[in-house]
Amino acid sequence: SSMWDSCIMAVNQLDAYFSMVGMFNEIRQEDISDKAVSYLADWLMSMKATNAVNIRSLSSLTKTIDPKTKVHIEILKAHYTNLNKRIDSELEKVAALKITSKKPAAKK
Image (spheres, one colour):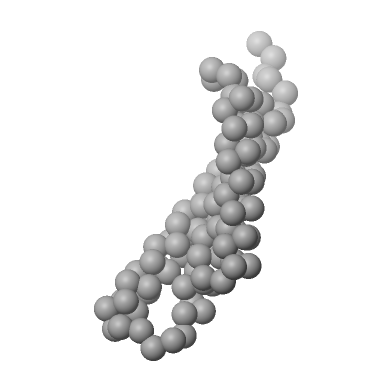
């Protein structure tokens, strides 16, 4: 992993941390605010960005390495790719939640 990738990952992790802190500070029991949903989406997007950096770093390993190490690298890349697919799925749910949180309550 290059120094640049390490710096990018650190920044992404800090973004994710502050999004998580904001999310926990905004969410009240069964009261989902637009701000809390935004923090959740930001947190998921930060995690996805970190995974992308990890995939790129693993893909850049071109030196001759042990075949067993190559197998583990492919497993890790598949793990991060699968995790990003799951994050995309969760982001779709968060987008739907964001839409429903903006709708006015039904009149009785």
